[in-house]
Length: 286
Ligand code: SAM
Image 1 (tube, rainbow, N blue to C red):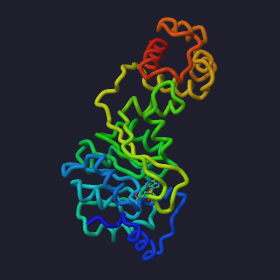
Image 2 (image 1 turned 120 degrees about the vertical axis):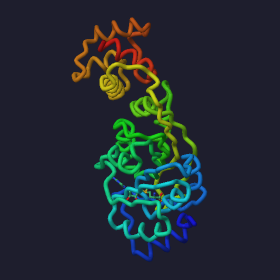
Image 3 (image 1 turned 90 degrees about the vertical axis):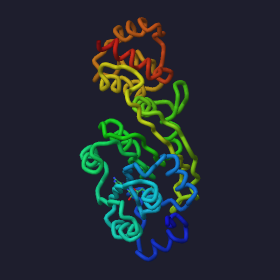
Image 4 (image 1 turned 180 degrees about the vertical axis):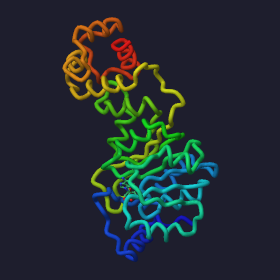
């Protein structure tokens, strides 16, 4: 039975192993069973699924995942947590614990080995200091995955889901929405964690698209345009992109492309949708 998520059990495990919580690894352990249940439910985990959990910590969420999934692969960077995980997960024969840094792993290779290349589900209460690199690595590297259900800082979840014209909208919104449909499924207050984080959190589910929702000939170039537009958020697109030397675009060429799209030369990136960025990229680099 998954019982570790109860606060008294978490504290007992920490004391028994005299474990010192490591801030440098972003360790905030979940101590609310309702939140744990909600995450596993939101991830729609079934007995068919192979789940990749990033940062199992003491194993609270892993216990729930092990009960709902066919198989769980739990990747934990902190070697001091491995003996604890071996104990808290000893009742489950379907969990593999790997002591590794997720950012340095060959995840496609892991999925090939563990799930014969079929899509896995990623579920995680992510260490907040590396949320964006982990998500972008998962989305960009072509790892076969159906969806990603993750706890992140509330503000980051809002940025992922943001639409054009809002203050949260930016390069992260566009990068995530090119690969997946984001949906915030729960807001989680700081008192659900030990220790309490200073910011609010949210669970967001990213459902991966089979095909990106826009057709763009050169993805890398489109993302370079997006980055350059939001680096200089207050500038018009013409100035923002024209000043970005790495793009090698003249302002005249940008104005001409915008005119072809029926856009004003004064338009800013923050009001430009993914479709518009894709169209602009296709015009500027035919
Ligand atoms: N899943 C647990 C829970 O919900 O209680 C712990 C979540 S805690 C926010 C993040 C976990 O990720 C910690 O256990 C931390 O040691 C681990 N972690 C941090 N950086 C990591 C990395 N690069 N690769 C794998 N695990 C990492």
